[in-house]
Image 1 (tube, rainbow, N blue to C red):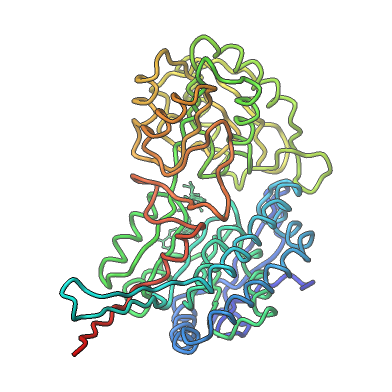
Image 2: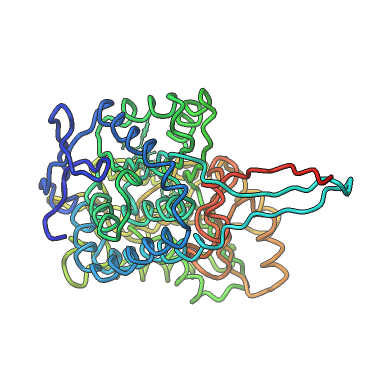
Length: 479
Ligand code: NAP
């Protein structure tokens, strides 16, 4: 894998879009176009669907051990090519190389994890209550899947879906985000090299997501949709999945509360804030969006956080020593600028940052706002940028109520040194995941996912494979 791959991957072949269309991919640090990839239309999607449907039967019959070993080989190839993959990812997405290397390792780990899960798919059985009938339960792949991924973690969002789908015996079509198709195409080549049979994975890059995906969801041959992206698009896809009763997993947006109590270890809390806010330049569904800090420590916390944020080096992700790369595009940056302007108009104080730099690239500086008005738009909008918005609170009931006052429920962060309070508050938060005295929850061995409008189902962990399996029950009377 030395040349950048730019074609569609259908039925094990690399092909152009049927109508020859291409879409540009640019480097958000410079605005320069770095590649043109095939821009699939509905005809290409149908070919990918044909390939996935055709490969499904034999793939489901392939021994779990064989599926496991393909994933294991791919895991090793990814790790061997860390540098190459990290550079590709940074060039299309912008994150600093150190973070891109971290994502390569995180992405590979999903393949190792699911290579281990592929051979542990359990069934069950037993004697029914009447004492005469027996039941035998087996678990079968759900069938051909459509996997739709966002641009913020170009490799890991793919492996978190492809890993369990392969382990379960499903075939699939992957539709990556148009901003970051190159990492997904590189991943397809690695899986091919690892021995994945033709048609099991098909990759369709496109700027026409709606035209390409809607017929697949309504057509009746795709049996499962696994989507990661915004809640708004998730809602639309749920509606489109209803016609053919397609099973869905939804990893959607978040609005994470980050709560610092008066008994928190402030060093730990500031370290946690840096991780929860600045991982991926704040462009993460798990990013802390609302900092609720107890009134008695708010000033000190804000001062220390501003100091740490202000010391970060902003620049192109490929440059040595850079901590913060560009945002994904001009639209993403304009949204961050608008949210900060709105908060400042409503009285927020800018402790650091807040000014867009001159020059090319979609850079935005690490920013800390204090005394944020709760009515500010960034309280109910995913900021998706390096902006920490601090509000104060006085008591536990109040902060739990305010933290839960949102339609989202992906993750929350709680900082306190009191065990009882830690457990009490964590259990009262309406979220799928809690970081207790830590700013990082993502781990391939843990079930990732949200409640309320942050999603349906879980990815990773022991349960991640369940999303791609269904039960078959055999009734066996014994005479
Ligand atoms: P997005 O706009 O919802 O797009 C996500 C994916 O859906 C892209 O591939 C996009 O392609 C595609 N898409 C959009 N409209 C579609 C349609 N009508 N039919 C089929 N596909 C369609 O989200 P994003 O801006 O890429 O990503 C940021 C969002 O993802 C945030 O809300 C973030 O919180 C969420 N996210 C969640 C998790 C999680 O695990 N919960 C993880 C990462 C990100 P196009 O761009 O071509 O439309």
